[in-house]
Length: 166
Image 1 (spheres, rainbow, N blue to C red):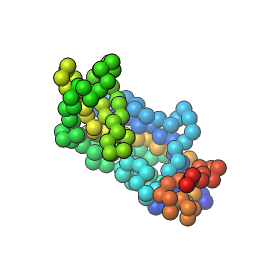
Image 2 (cartoon, rainbow, N blue to C red):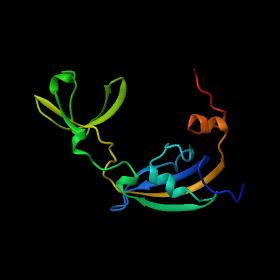
Image 3 (cartoon, helix red, strand yellow):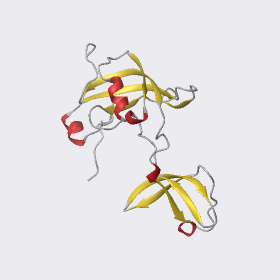
Image 4 (cartoon, helix red, strand yellow):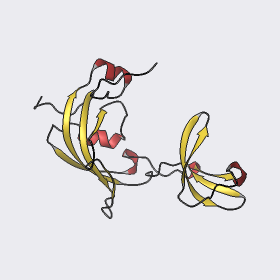
């Protein structure tokens, strides 16, 4: 498998470090734990991350910088909404930057509090990384062809032969 390269329907394991290119601050890394494993070509990762590792082989280290459109998208003003304060429990202390999850149509939807008063709370439903340019340093640790099951389910199964509960 040494000559195989990352392509659609391969399961790849990577170690990565994500940082902000303007100041080098690391926002996420797998280096202290297990590598991250995912199936290529099934939208399990932000688009630019998949594109950045396509064509790499085990042992390769690749670096790439993603503009917001290839990462978590641009900030959308329409995703910042004001909600009446009484929609939140009275005893709940509100603070700027607080991350919460709303139940919208039965779907857990994360948001961040970006402003509040006695009357309303300003909630930002943009992804916390929206509008940000991201830099990744990625090492390809392992690579294999996906199984038919993984391709059908659209994600990598674990080394223990992950099964779905139906």
